[in-house]
Image (cartoon, rainbow, N blue to C red; front, side, top):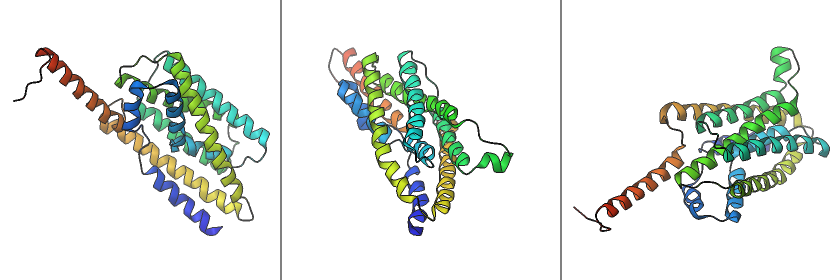
Length: 258
């Protein structure tokens, strides 16, 4: 057991060393995707979205009662569905780096709350957990919406309600997959040394959240763009292709070389 909880923080830090974004293949594939494809893309984004996964780990960490799990996951699900669907449908967006920074803060918050930080540092109980999970769920959903809108803009797609809902269904399926993996693993950690496991793991969440928070703010101040690097790369490819096509049309459909 000792070896396991020593490895967990290292594994977590290794995972967050890579920027969570949207792969080029996914962006390109969504230019001509079916509703089933949107479901797949939503599930893929949630399963590979370690910022979302880390927050869910924090939420589930001390929960053993299935009714409690249902209440908290339902609050999170309803919240991110609201912002994902409505923000995307009405074209409400924001800087992706800043939204992801707030999502990173949600990971810090949950690790800090799990460590009883409010009582130890401020001598008062933590805010109502379900309300906080709901609020952070709104932010997580807004982050998902921002990514989806970026991809749609790159591919010159006006997203329909059916496409948005399909992506949302995929996100929920991906969340179920994550829960089916994470909860049994957390259950395996419970035992005589759970207090030590809890302390190390939740400090791991705080450190991971701080790393992600700094990473996203650095991206915001250095990139100076609404888009993440992975999406920018694909956007440049699309713009180059569009310019090339425009150049060809302006010469009567013939491509000239110099």
